[in-house]
Image (cartoon, rainbow, N blue to C red; front, side, top):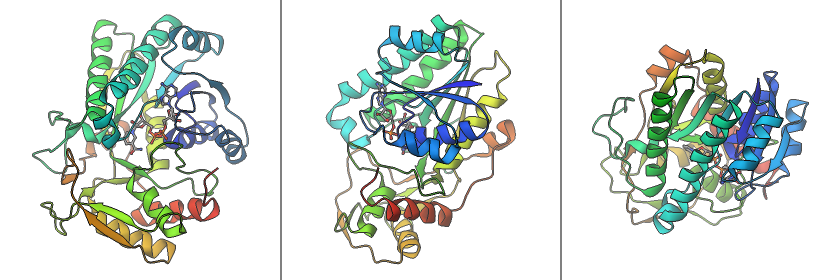
Length: 335
Ligand SMILES: NC(=O)c1ccc[n+]([C@@H]2O[C@H](COP(=O)([O-])OP(=O)(O)OC[C@H]3O[C@@H](n4cnc5c(N)ncnc54)[C@H](O)[C@@H]3O)[C@@H](O)[C@H]2O)c1
């Protein structure tokens, strides 16, 4: 396959590009570098032993994106390009809707024009919001609690409506929970140019000495130790799940959505302990007020992906922390 990876210079997209190249596929990355650096491209090539084609472009430019798809004879798309910070989305909701929704509709319009019919859409476990049932099954009604998660829930609706109106499309939405870790080589990892808001990279920056301490937002949730519980999943597992989803499409599969995660809740305090063990350092912390829109526990039931995609072999929390630490300790200031 020749796969177009939008947002391929970002955290998940860079690991995805390695996984695709290593599986023998051709890769074209489209990224506007709004939250990433082009330096990652050399690292991808170093690990995979071959390069991805790179086009610096905002996916909202439908005309140029159509040209990239047509000229490259693209036959599948993995759409990662989006803004992703929950807290920032509450301060800049319109920017999030513009980038994430217009970005998606532009990708779908370009795919329609260029005849590309196989797409994997990067959704999020956060669309479930404060769910009634844990682990959360795919059948739970999405109740997103912030603008970012609403862009993902609405993005899925757009994909489903397109598949209903044009059965030649196959679109799979993968709802992953908290992608974390890094490639085991230590050559690529998470290095945003914008906000650092995911917990594991913050812990890594504390461990390496770039930050003094971690802020724990809330220790009075209804969870065993009072801190928020999330489902951390290795970024290489997330990448491999997209590859499996793409390879599984046989044409006219319609719209499908799967949870991707280890299906196991890990609290903030448990993650801090795992990082202390992996890095061999003590992590200083302060407790702050929980944020608006924060939910107590979010972890998914991942049996459907196991049954229908055959995807169930997840790396452990220890591997997530060990690989993240290898990346951070070898690249304390990123790329
Ligand atoms: N990391 C997570 O915790 C998580 C969880 C669930 C879902 N997701 C989703 O996975 C996807 C990738 O996440 P990530 O963690 O790799 O984020 P990231 O910010 O590291 O990567 C996104 C990439 O897209 C690019 N980009 C953003 N808007 C663009 C646009 N309009 N045109 C072209 N490029 C654009 C950025 O420069 C960046 O390289 C996102 O859609 C995100 O919402 C992430």
